[in-house]
Image 1 (tube, rainbow, N blue to C red):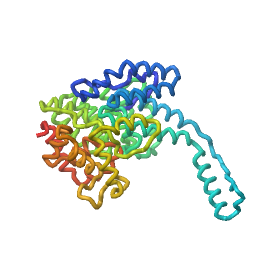
Image 2: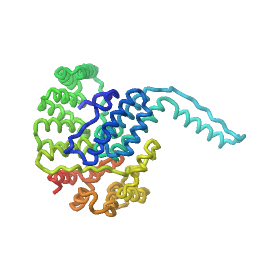
Image 3: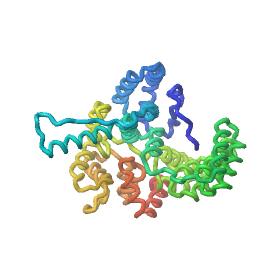
Image 4: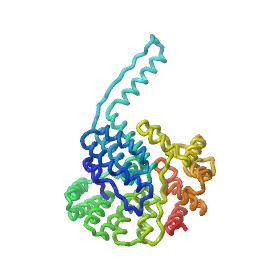
Length: 422
């Protein structure tokens, strides 16, 4: 559905609250402990004391690293900072460097010129925006690794840093005009007129993905789920590789209690991009189909890739002490020289770096740990369990390669898992 703009005055109120039955016990417990402190931190932030709020929240996250609410709040802060810094532009800046020490050689002059060009490029334009984008990514990478329930963070890392983007360019003048009208009516809460103008947009540009998806949203807001379903399906037909319309088609089907159809669409969606929200919906559907629905996603205490961010050094160092995930980290370090930038192992039987690290961890960790992973491994589905249910943005390249070559196996796995992992 259309994502509302993030207003920091609603920082605490907008946090997602999962039903306890679908939360991991540890996440629910840590959320409950963190709530009173989160409210105070939000109040500090709203008073303009942003650095103080961030410092307190980082300290809280070091204590409660599995709190989805805490991570989602930290992500909102980083997102707002990035949005603000994107507006700062320094224009064209020229920086000159000179050779010191009396070296007048041509080599020294070239080094100085090269440094001048690099510094000028760094500080030209929106360099603060670029810095804060890296800071935002550092937050989101940790939120979606260290916590299995940070749904908002998962949505943000997908929409900003994955290939899940619609690149269609609207050229028809009337389509642009009708779409702008539709957006205005939607923003005003007049969903009937919004749906009408999204439809007019599609008459002028039949390939307008957003118009089709948002038309579905307009009907969804009016609880006309069958019409919403048609809008989402039209958008899916245009861009079958994008998640968003599929995600909300699942919601429309859930509201109609069409559980079997919702399960099928949800499985397809998970093989496009398995974000935390999709897995949560999958569990709701499985539960309503009368099957066991334990959370298959685990909190990672080791990142697939270390970025060595100073902002989160305390949290990183605390979690690196986990007695089980240290085996994952050791395997990653031992094998990364054989891996390409996406984490593919061309010369190794495991094929995927993340899968290899999981195998090594399962072999060395106590047999009482990672029960679902071990059950999947027994059935020959460990690759699916790791690369689908526990995909991280850093392993997205491995996920897409795996699905491209094992789509039917992945669907079979989701059917098996949806039957109570048996």
